[in-house]
Each structure stands twice: as C-alpha cells, then as structure tokens.
Image 1 (cartoon, each protein chain N blue to C red):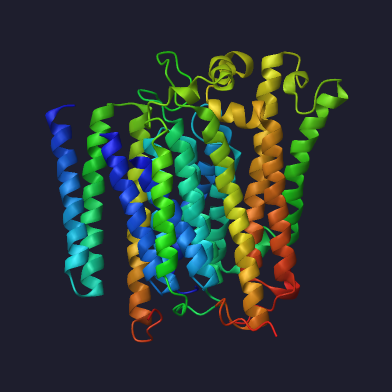
Image 2 (image 1 turned 90 degrees about the vertical axis):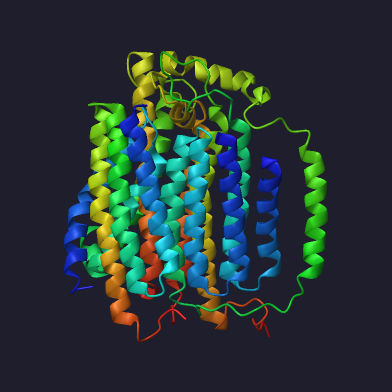
Length: 107
Length: 96
Length: 176
Length: 140
C-alpha cells in the first residue's frame, strides 16, 4: 500500500507538469516527481530490523547503502538542474515578457 | 524510559499542539505569531530536557544542549523579523 | 509503528502537492514546497537513510527556497488559470494509477526486501569497508572509494550546470 | 538592510557556527553522517546568509565572482589529479592504494582529498548560482 501512495505522488507530479501553463509551477511539479522517485528508492532499501549503514561492533544487520549513495548524488544534481531551469525562466521572461506558456507569442 | 522523561515528552508534545491550534484559531497576525513563538520556546525546552535526561551525561547531551541554544537564538530572531516585516508592509499589501 | 508513521507522512506529502495544484499564488506554492522537502527528509530519516536526510534538509529547504524566491522577484507573483480542461488528463491518470497498482503487488513489502540486500556487491561493501578503507560509514566509502568514478561524473555535471547558469544570465538584463 | 540591528547582530553570531558545522560535516563524514556534498551546501548557505543581510557589495569583497569561478574549477581538478596519481604509479585511474606507503592509509587520504574536492566544487557552484541570480548583466 505504501507503494500506491508513492505512485499517487508520482502521478500528481506528472499532472502538474502536463496541465499547468505557468513555468515555475511546472518546475515545482518536476521537483515533486523527482522526490517520489527518491522515496521509492529509499523504500526498497530498508531492511527490517536494520540500522543506518555505519559499521559498529554490536550490530550485524544494516540497511542497504547502495541506493543511499545513488540518491545522495541525485538530490544535489537535481538542485543544479533546477537552478538551470530557473535561469532559463528568467531569460524567457526577459525575451517574451511573460512566463505563461499559453501567452508566449513566438511570431 | 523513566516516568519523568515520559511526562516531560508528553507535556512538550501537548504544548506544541496547543500552539499549533492557536496559530489556526486566532484571527490577527500578531496574536498568531505570539501564540506560536511563546509555546514553541517552552515545548522545545521540555522535549530536549527529556532527551538529555534519557542520555545521561554524555557527548550526545552536550550536542542536544547546543541544539537548544541554537534553536532559541534563531527561532526568536525569525519571529522578530516576521513581525517587523508585518509592521512595515501591512499597509502596502505585498502579498495579495 | 514506523509503517503507520510512513503512511501519515506520505498522506501529508499528497495533501501538500494537491495544494500546489490548487493555489495560484506562487509565493505560497514555494513555501509549501519547502514544507514538502522537510517532510521528505523525515521520511528518509525513518527509513535509515541519514545521509540522504541531511542532504535533503540542506538542499531542499535551504538552497532551493532561496533560488525560487530569487526568481519570483523577476516574474508576476500570481499565476493565471489554464484554459486546458482537466477531465481527460484526470481520467487518463486514474487508469494509469490502477494499472501501476496492479503491477506493484509483485514488489516485496517494505522492510522485508531481502532480495536487494542479498546482492553480492552490497554484501562486499558492508563486510570490507572497515578492513580495506578504515571508514565505518559505508555510504562515504562507497561514494568516494568503490564508486569514485561515478561521483566524478556527478561533480562534473554540477560544474557544468554552474557554468551554464553563468552563461545564460550574463546576457540577461533582469527587468522586474 | 542597514537598520535591522537584531538581524545583523544575530547573523554575526551564528555565521561562525554554520561554517563550523559545515566543516564538521566535511571532515567527520568518515565516522558519522556527512560528506562533501552536504558540507558544500551548508557552507554555501552560510555565505548566502551573509550576502542577504549585509548586501552583495560587502559579500564580493570577501568572496568575489572570479574567486568562486576559480575555486569551483580547482575542486574538479583536485578530484581528477587524485585519480591521475594512480595512473602515474602504474595502477588504475582513481586507485588510492599508492598514495601512501600503507594501503589502508592511502585509501583514507584518497577519500579525504576527493571529499575535499567535492565540497569545494559544490559550495562554490551554489554561491556562484546565487550571485548570478541577484546580480545580472555585465558584472558577471
């Protein structure tokens, strides 16, 4: 059932990207979409009865560290790509005078 | 977990809940921030005190104490700045 | 207990994202995105991923909010309503949700996925991190040691993103 | 923000704490949660707070745009240089065993240097993005 809630979040993010015409809200939808994927990765890496993957003498079961590494770098890359998208939005506002997708006049 | 820790923890949670209810109940901006800030200070004190008693006198307790001091400084400053911004911009309607 | 808390937190995330759909004020949308990131950090903490939680709290609630707020200085704060009809998209997405939910029943329950933990690579990392590298935190040793080449690529991606932002905004006037 | 006395004093008080916490996260990452990525972001947020409160002109006198450009390139170059140290001594790219006489200490030194490079790059890229968003045009 947790996966179904997670996938609902995934589809809400996709919905915002498809329907909204405001570009900033589109970027926020992309962030929600990414977050749902991150949560999915971390959900499958949890091991029952495990502890955080820092080795100590009196523990033998640890959660899986490999998805943590992948998501750790993905979060920092996502902020870099978000800032690139925001820079492009400022450039679009500068050139066309609006950030509503429907109102941009390409002609 | 001893009795004192449990009582402190529950008291902290209840006071935080009261502050949140006050934030939604009051009509005026200034009384809302007042409710949140006063109750917030007390509930963090109770919760962190409970955790310090639970850990005993170790390095972790010192770190928790530092967290308490940091929260006191930044939290009160944040409420101060919010109120200043309200007093300055309330007539101009910066946020519609 | 943890599972019940996870249900509540994921429902909070869904409520926040529905608020993002409804609200037209970009300022409140951005502040609710900050709350979204903090709740995400809490979920990661509950699922034993402390490094990821720290990163999400610093990046999502700190830097990301500052960048979004810097951007809405230059654009209108109120978003106009779209003319597109929501009905066909919602129907399509409900069908998609039902089909995904059917597929998801093949996945193991969260926490009981020994399938993942049995992989040879993970076992090797956990068993040999202290003896080979002397680093108790397995995430650090995998990030910088075993998978160093991967991290090099990520760092170069961040570097290129910084250069690109500089190049795009250099020719922009930034009229408010 | 010249007239916000409380804000200025509190900022002066907590910026050293933020930078100290960032350095702790950077150098204690081997033994607890942390590492280059998180530390870079935290240190960058400390600098950004300083720039917001005291103004960009004062911020530029501490860390100018040219300095951030150079430092972020130095971070990536440090990472690649550690990788090439292995090739010079006849091993694979990014193999840290040869950095010191004992293999385990070589690994520790390699991880330390690599995390340092990552932290430099991430913090300076974040500061540079903040500068670009708030100071456009010819000044960049």
